[in-house]
Structures are given as C-alpha cells and as structure tokens.
Length: 157
Image (cartoon, rainbow, N blue to C red):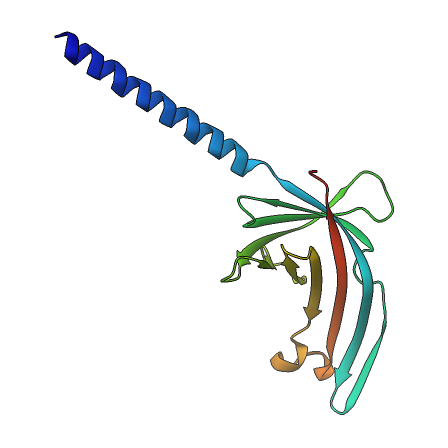
C-alpha cells in the first residue's frame, strides 16, 4: 500500500515537471525576435522587349523592423523610416533553407508585394519584387523590378 502511494507521488512529480517544462518551452518559442533593418542600396527599373532601365530608388522603406515569431515561420514587417512609432506594413510566411540559415518569406494573402530573403548568420536581407505583366500578357508587356539589399541589428539583446 505504501509503495503504491509512493509510485503515485513519483508519477505526479514527473508529470508536473513535464508540464512545467512544456509551458516554459512554449513561452520561449512564442517570444518574438525583433530586428531593426536598414537598406544599403535599392534599384528599380523596367524591361520591355529590347529596352532595359534600372536606377537607384527608394521603393522600399529605408528603415524597417522585422518581427519574427513561431520559430521564424511568421514575419511581421513594420515601417520605421519617418516616425518613431511603428506602422504595420506586411505579414509573411517564412520557410527555412535546408541548412536552417536562410529564410525565404512570402507575403500572406492576395497582396502583390515583395519577397524577402533573410540570413540568420549574417543578418543581411534582400527584398525583391518583379511583376508578372509580361508572362500574363498584360500592361504592354512591361515588367517592373525592385530590389533592395540591407543589414539588420538584433533588438532583443
């Protein structure tokens, strides 16, 4: 009888440790990771038939905050260029590369926006937008391209 009570106590002890560890791990995985990102260079242009044109541009905001959550599977990007308070911009779903160091993030929903590649090793990013007018046979078969490179700083440290 005493042994049965001790077994139940031991089982409850192990169960409570398991529950506490699970709650702790879940709380850590839900904490968002924030990066302030600055654009180094951006170009925009168009191409149509034999014509090509690229120039320096500010199509993308100069300063943004990228907020990753759910183990880098979700990204919420906010513009921080002109104001100190952040304006929500876009939300993305992200996928990790095989070596887990490069994220490729695609916009959520039907919004035609840019794709982001983000390196967890170097904290550099690339934003790119290429329209599909030529492929779809729309818009005088002109496609527009916008590309920006930049780097980020971890705000959680």
